[in-house]
Image (cartoon, rainbow, N blue to C red; front, side):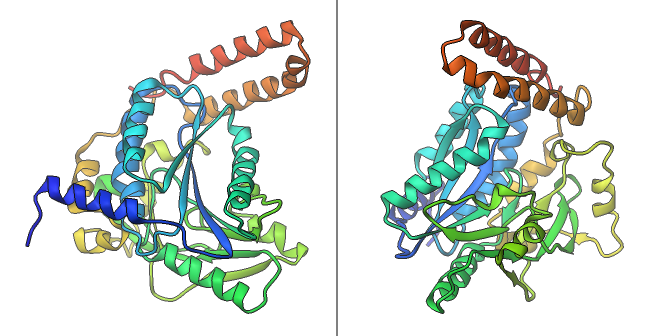
Length: 339
């Protein structure tokens, strides 16, 4: 029997509401940064389209629902974007929206939230997982990560563990083309299991150097290998804010082993044919200037704000006024990122 769209949506909401954390030993937190320091409604319109049809779709499709998804946003997030995000969270008890002031606050804020949540749930361990807001994970990844973590603890393991799903797919949604890829420390799905009393989270180091940085401190490393592609990395013009002049999209779509990502290939990630079509047919916004340079300017402003915080907390009115000026400048330079 086929459900009507309204009945199908109601069934999905019931299934999501039934989801409840079951682990006795650890709390699983999937964490995503969503436009911290961005104040352009147009940028968010496109990014949230990606997020809804990729990231959110893949989490809705997870076979194991024992996780919390923390989406970190700027406390001054544009109103329309915040309203849309609140709407997505309304029927999803696994989705928590966490406000933060600056990009540099994301990691300590996430660590504090995770520690408090684990304490409230009486969990001795926490498992944190990276996920960008324009990518997707295989519907079985949460279950596999949790199996690995549970087996490690059941076997008496007591050191922290890095879990790395090494196989995935790079793709360019606009061209519906991509290729299989390997990464020893991916930006999607990389996870860290650690004790709950003082979690630093998987975001404590850059994903590329996490294992190298932590192995000398007796951290364990386990690769999730095999034939399953665990992650789906979407390459778009807006996904390259951290580098200048990237040609990754051309390299991915033009790879000699590239293939078409049709409905059958996307289904394991929860991505529907309709969702893929919407993304493919929606024109990408055109950037107004270098996102890389804008990002660097924004980080410089954050550094100055951070340096004034202690004085402002101590009652220094001039420091408070300067912080307000810096926040206004931060908003101004990031209000017109695309057109």
